Each structure stands twice: as structure tokens, then as C-alpha cells.
Amino acid sequence: MVLHEAVRLQGEEELARPVVALLLSGLAAGLAITISLLAELYLRMRLPDERWAELVYLLGYPVGYVIVIMGRLQLFTESTVTAVLPVAARPSIAGLARLARLWSVVLTANLIGVLIVVALMAGEVVITHEQRLIAIDILQKLPAQEGLKTLTLGIPAGFLMASIAWLLPNAKGSEFWVISLLTYVIALGGFSHVVTGFSQTAFLWLNGSMTVADMLLDFLLPAFLGNIIGGTGLFAVLAHGQMREDSEAAEEE
Image: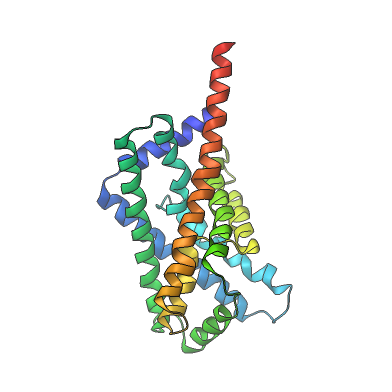
């Protein structure tokens, strides 16, 4: 119950933030999260094309998340649990409206931030020509997914990201390891994170290897829905339901 209250209060703080603050924080998070893509790219370039190498280069995936989460920047998938708990505790139309405002502003800002960096990558501003060609080759070799598969892979990603937000209040001094471990699992499982995955698909789109329709319908929208189902539908609702049952049991005693 104490943990639930700590996360709920964090959610209340997020819901009360001005739109401009949410926009700037979300934009910064979008810019920073692309470090995951760059870190993976730099590691892959220096490793042989062997099966075991994946265990090493995927260690680059958590880097952007460490910056974003420990830097207290606004990432959409974290708010699928933190911002939902206040609304679940006191359901109202006004609360739902505040949640919709938060999600729409933060996700839009995250995607804009990602798109800025990816455009710089595609234009060979922040990476070299050789690195861009290697990145295209690597991303083109990723398994093609249809929308339904992306949605199902987005559910565990949403659950794991919500788990991070839930665990951090009790992870004093161990935040780095909690973030790194759980996001590494997302990478190992090939799960679909709407913001990080957008950096990959947007890069392919800007380099002519993917259409806008494929990017939106086969990745962005399904991943968005999957992350919400995993973070809100599974984690937040179950956590809140458990708290309510414990609270009612305590009152009966």
C-alpha cells in the first residue's frame, strides 16, 4: 500500500504538470532515447557476425533508458502505470481528460524528439556515411512483423516498463541496475517499445526502406496499443486491484 501511494503521488504530479513542461520533458526524452539505437549500432560495428554477439551489442539498448529515467524525463511508457493509478483510485471524467492530455502530449513529444535525431542520422550529420549504410543493413535484416504480431510483442514491453516505474521507489541506490536489467530483457525478447522502435522504423523510412503506411500500421499504432495493454491493462490495473483488496482486508480486521 505504501508503494502504491508513492507511485500514485508521482502520477498526480505528472498529471498536474503544465503542457509546456510536459512537451519539453517529452522532447528531451525522445532525443535521449535514440542513444539506445546509436549505442547498439556502435557495438554491432565492432563485433563479428556471430550468434553470441547479440548478447553483447544489446547491452547498448538500456543506455537511452538510463538517461531518460534517471534523468526524470517524461517517457510515454512509464506513464502507463504512474499516471493511471490516480485515475483508477478516483475515477472521473476530469481525471480521464488529464490522462489523455498527458499521454497525447508526451507521446507526441517523444516521437518528435526521436524523429529529429533519426533525421540527423539519415542526413549523416551525427553518424558517418559508412555507419549509415551499416545501420540500414542491420535494420533491414530484422524480422518483418505484421501489426498483430507487433501488438502482442508490445504487451510484455509495456508490462516491463510499468514494472520499472513500480520498482524504482523501492530501489534506492539500485536504480541503474533495475532499469538496465528490465530494458535488456525487452531487447533480448525483441519486444515492441513504441518510442524506441520508432527510431528504427523511422530511420528505415527516411532511407527509403519502409513506407509511411507500413511504419504506422505495422509498428507505431500496434506497439502503442500493446504498450498500453501491458502497462495499464495488465500491470496498473492488477497492482491497483491488489492494493484495494489489501486495503479492504485491513479495514475488516
